[in-house]
Image 1 (cartoon, rainbow, N blue to C red):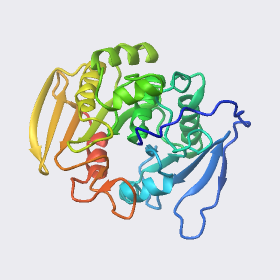
Image 2 (image 1 turned 135 degrees about the vertical axis):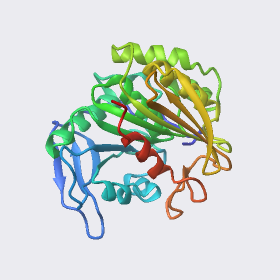
Image 3 (image 1 turned 180 degrees about the vertical axis):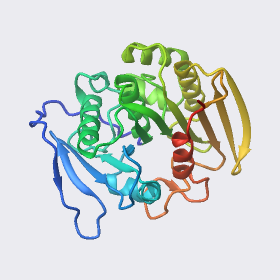
Amino acid sequence: MSTRLVALAVVGAALIAAVAVHGAPKKDEPFKRGALGRRAYRLYVPLKASVEPRTLVVALHGCWQTPEDFARGTRLNDAAERRGLLVLYPAQSRWDNVNRCWNWFDPANQSRQAGETAELAALVQAVAREQGTAPGRAITIGFSAGGFMAVNLLCAAPELVSAVAVVAGGPYRCGLGLDGALECMRGLRLDGAASAAACQAAAGRRTLAVRASLWQGDQDTVVAPANLRALETMFSRLVGAEARVTETRDRAMRVLHHDGRGDPLIEAWFVPGLGHAWSGGDPRATHTWPPGPNATDLILDFLLEPRVK
């Protein structure tokens, strides 16, 4: 995400009729192509048979990225194939943001009623119905601007999302408008408790039945590491976490937050040497850091882990 070139959404684009249209994958491309209204997307459908109903992963790319670049960098399709998961990659256009950033900081794009968050919620519902995925069990994974937008989607449509991964992102409504977004990304005026309260108000719920995987690099100069602590506070309040344990794993610090039954609900990874990038990603794509822990597999391991009965 660029701190200098982030642009507000372009006003005036009219929604086309909300009809999903699938296209056959292009040669050497693993995706189905489609659009819901004016929101284009890619969909990865694994060849491997899976237990029904299948799980849908919603992957939200960062600024400057495309669904294809994000899929390559995260190796998410490979992981989905092994696990029998579908992956939905919504695409941000240069029409909506010249840098392809999701406009997470614009109040017009944060509600369930209109804007980008509403479009994403409608897209998740449409693809879930079409593909027969588990209702209300989508996993949302986002990097940078996509991480901020993943939080927006959870707070606006909690009935659709059961788990969230935020890599190099921040808490809900931490900054409104362009100036507020830049302050938030710099680690200024963060308040995890206030973000939790704003999320509860948007969701219409005091607690959310959600699991979260949060990632931040100590060398990130785009989204300040202070955002990780604010995210931990926000999610701890949303899920009612009661205890935390710190451990060293894969040469990184990992904090686990548990509920009263001992079920781990939140993990927070703080990775030494990681900048504004996807840890353990493919070097052929943008915003990846191959030496780090394999964020993709570790995120899915945690978010898909069965909960204590």
